[in-house]
Amino acid sequence: MNKKGFTLVEVLVALVIAVLVVGSAMALIGGVYQSRYRLDRRMKAIPVLDAAAQAIFRDPSLVHEDSIVLKELPGSPVVYVVATRVNDGEIASSVALYRVKLRYEDSEIEFSVVSSEE
Image (tube, rainbow, N blue to C red; front, top):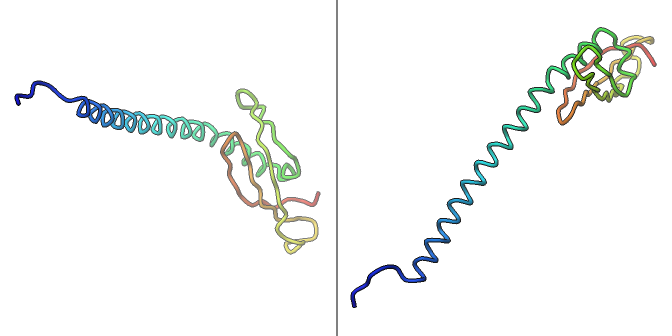
């Protein structure tokens, strides 16, 4: 018997393989773009978080606030502050050591600061 062309099974197998290869490539490309988007967002958030940390270092009483509005930056971003006291007057009776977590969009930084009592 002389064969001319492909059987239906061969065509279907080739089609399934092609769909798997193209689907895998699309998932890989989508993952790259999603990672790039998250990285861009974090890179834009870092200067805002740094500015908020500098504001707290200049005025440590800001650790008692729930949020800080950075009016000097475009768009006046709001950075959320979570401060936890980590000592019981071990430094001095009038000051306390706080562990501060700043959160902006999906990024955050953490540091310690000495502040006066609330």
